[in-house]
Image (cartoon, rainbow, N blue to C red; front, side, top):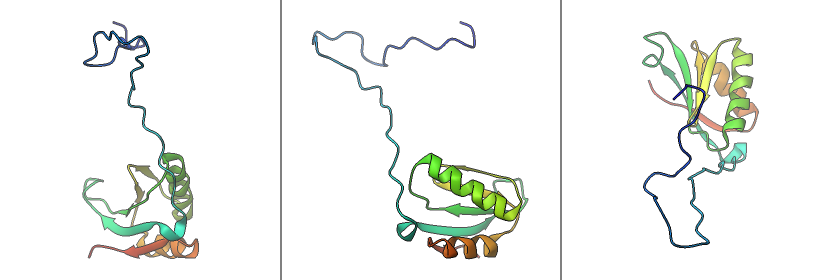
Length: 117
């Protein structure tokens, strides 16, 4: 099989159904609805484990769609003039920008607080 072609579309575990109206649910997840900033419970902390010992600011607790998470991550990375990544309700910004990010989130109406030591 070439790398560009996908596997068979048959769902795992279902071989045959005698029900003529059967439609298989492929498990496509629906996007979570993004909570308003005042209902978000964000934690801002310093992390040294994910970047091989280098300092990085980790923001956790975001509840919402991945597009909204990516938009917030882009704003924070632009604010700090740094790189980073986002996914699974977390944003990672390279460098120690805890205070700057915390002030920005509070100014934007997010419920955020520092975490960790």
